[in-house]
Image (cartoon, rainbow, N blue to C red; front, side, top):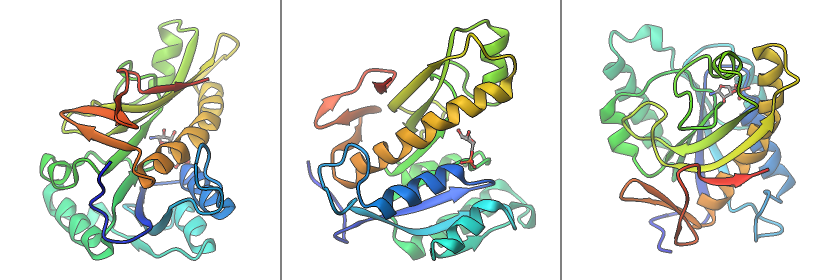
Length: 229
Ligand code: GRF
């Protein structure tokens, strides 16, 4: 598979809005130098070049500081429109020349222009078994529907909210869960497992998007993405 990468190691920018537990999972994967499912035993093949938050003083920024990663706060409230914020965000990202942009609990809808600009190198993690429950309150919706399983999906970002092609998905039984918080706790464990795997695949040139489908090792993935148990 061809790569357009200019640097040897894939440069990953992580966008956050809050706690950053997914960011921490990615930092840990880099630090352990053995990203899950990686063929490279000693080098994950990527580095986190920047962490950008649209909210000041969030825990995720502390996590980045502790890991000695460049941090930028772009408070969206200081910009008059979504497009104005996205333009500054895009310019900031351009300064870091990322090969991959990872949305990790980034609670902002991105404008179509932004998504187009970074298409193919923009991924998100969503706390549901997509295509079920795009949008908010996913765990409550799973509970209300009486679903036996909940989960999470990493997907390429397209102009449609939570609608881009899936990359990897994990699910867990929730029949014993009494509320959305219990489900969230269970699902987050899976999030922390699958996000580093997806990044590892991308960084090692195993993953790409073509014609709105995800491909792993040149094989088209199913609509759910690669399913891990
Ligand atoms: C995660 O549950 C993710 O699926 C959702 O936002 C949450 C972010 O959590 N998009 P964290 O900031 O990574 O702890």
